[in-house]
View 1 (cartoon, rainbow, N blue to C red):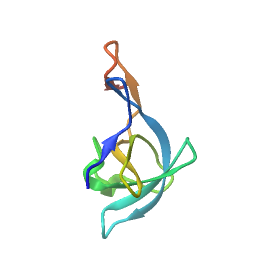
View 2: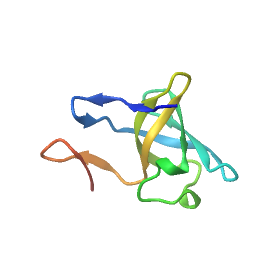
View 3: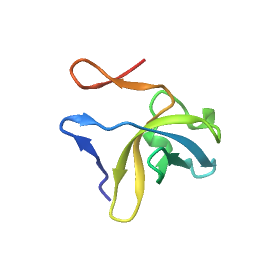
View 4: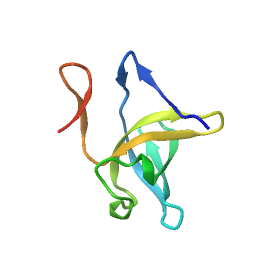
Length: 92
């Protein structure tokens, strides 16, 4: 299964959301995004945070991705993200 991130040119599109579900035994969770959709994620999508540090209700930023049958979060971070001068994401 190949995951393709949504992009705008060469820049990744970051979306804010709130964690709504965590399954410790499977290291997976769900995010309710500002765009009104629900996205799933796995621990290997996390950047700068461990799965055990997450909590329901925490705000995260992520890159939306899609597969043939699901909405997924490609990269998930608890740190605010912004675009640098050259258009690449950077941490605040």
